[in-house]
Image (cartoon, rainbow, N blue to C red):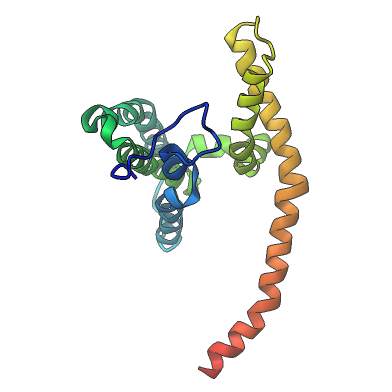
Length: 206
């Protein structure tokens, strides 16, 4: 992408292909993060963590969160600084791939569900936010863009705008989760259940 000279991002050319769209927004540019999550789950599900007590588990959770707070910001800056403007796409890939490792550590520590932080996150409202998180991811950028373009709350404090965008994104995401995401999940599972007997029959025949 860098060698082809594709522009990284231009707000006045949103209908054109950009390096930002290809390496940051496109699922193909983020597939390694998706696979990292699968690998973490597959590995952790095969290990018995019965020996891990609440104190050490809580320490692991806090350390992993601290790594996000203190290490992620430099990782967000340094790739572009060292590679320069001629390698914006490569810098972007390095940036979110390396930060993904930190988030994988956080999620893995919560997956163990043995520390105080993960126990707090098991509170039902927090679980619900986790369930709609993908829908929040899908809608938040649109909410931000509409808020800016339509000049909503233009004269208000930035914190008010932030609260508006956050609350609006959560409300919209809840509707998307309930009326789009969940029905699609059920449809995909029904389709998989319908195909699975044929897959098993084919495997047996082979």
